[in-house]
Image (cartoon, rainbow, N blue to C red):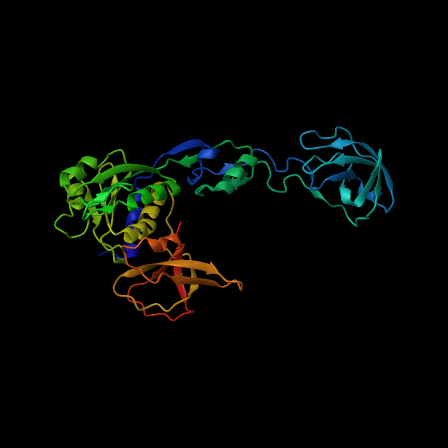
Length: 397
């Protein structure tokens, strides 16, 4: 059995050999994609000094209690005042509008009394205020988003503010998902004796899309090597097989992939759940075999499929646990496999991170995933830990 760290290193190595190409995509299509080239601002933000409040653009030197200023015009967003502000003058201004030449302060409307063309100062500000200076957020030419960043909504908004309409990203890897088993039927159909619902394939397809890849449904194969071989698609960068990878008489998936020219990279991982997870390399595609037990498939997808997608898009998968939290319950010693426990991470009122493992960690159970937002990582051959001790965890994403 390959240790988890070795399996992850092999996945990263093989993924890096097959990095997908690049493409330009519009901002709205970039969510979840890996940025291949940095985003550089084409404008400054704000582009000029602008008002942070509604009020009056004035000279701070005129800000004396009771001073009466003549209102000479108006500046609003998109329609700046064309003139300048001289001594004893004010320009009505709105939030986001350009500050007129000559003004160095915005008298907020709550501190002023307007009567016709005159505004009177009702509060004396000690220094200039209420102005957002040009380039406060970023300046023309600044790098807004570095290469390698996985695009979120914040990066999309930032790029748009920088007047960038398209992003150069890694192409989305094509990930096919094949479920295997005579006992499986699609959700929504009637079940005969001995049949179970194909519950993992829809979830994996959704996760793959969330992780920035193209998800391809390769269907449901029966316990037949010929049927599995017929569904192996050369158009996929990765084929994910669910089930049929253990040691039973009808577990035919690995032999089918071998017959199609896939060579094993590793055949088992020292992980719980997920020991039957395997990885093979073919001429046109990689293949990742996940266990048929639902929870084991979901856990191993997080541990091994997501890093593979990262590697295919030019990323460097981080194989280390993200942080530590205090376990809410005692945890027993582990055996010769690393264990990943479905858990709920929470932050208390005192700011302390606490994590509680689900009571039942059976690899067939999906219900713990409804509330789980993390996996507790327990190294192989580790001693038990008492409630309140620190344990490592990774976020579920």
